[in-house]
Image 1 (cartoon, rainbow, N blue to C red):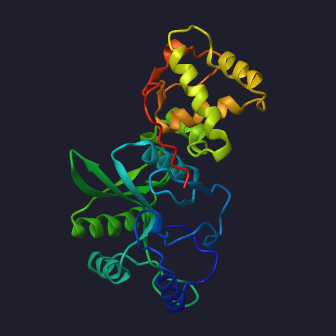
Image 2: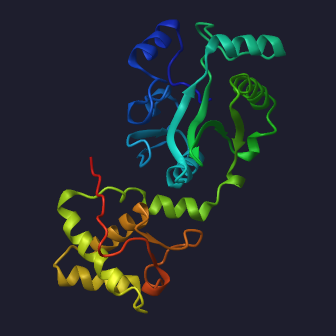
Image 3: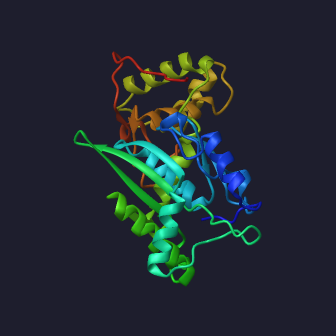
Length: 277
């Protein structure tokens, strides 16, 4: 849970509910906590997700990195961050376990707890839900953090939903960095679609070439009088869309990556779906 910028009250809780926070799915979901609601915003970020096709409110770099891994994973079909837990249930659990439930210092109103990520996964045609809390490993020894974890763990166990804690140790940093590098290129502006399609077909035709990706991109920009770097943004788009595959566990260096190291996941006859809505 993050420290709120302003006090908590029954009125604010009701306002959140009326606003639709914590409700909906995919693009209709509204997080219970938004960046402007918390006091510390230094490492917070907003990203337009590929999976849910909406803006995500990520309150730390660790949350951002875990979100990127989820957005990249094909089996994940929905990502709901800052997901609220029923306050009556968490109060009851806290009382049963003899744990102090968080309250607002001024009003004394119990503060609604949230789980960082509530995730929908479809694997082998089976849909399931998992809940994950993201925390730096250095905080796992904090007694108060452990108490809140126990409330959260019990809450999700009652729901029959898998819950766990993700730290920086469970996140492959280079993979997360690579996804961040390509993430904003998932969608293309309409005027870029024709050029990107030409470049993709060129890569398919030259897939056995030992030319570096950077050489091909620079030449393409020059041949079509494009702004320098345009082709590289298309390459990021192709990787994000998984039209081409490269080793995402290693740092991507276009000057060293040759075309024969790239796996083409489309052929020149394929119809490419450019969903830019």
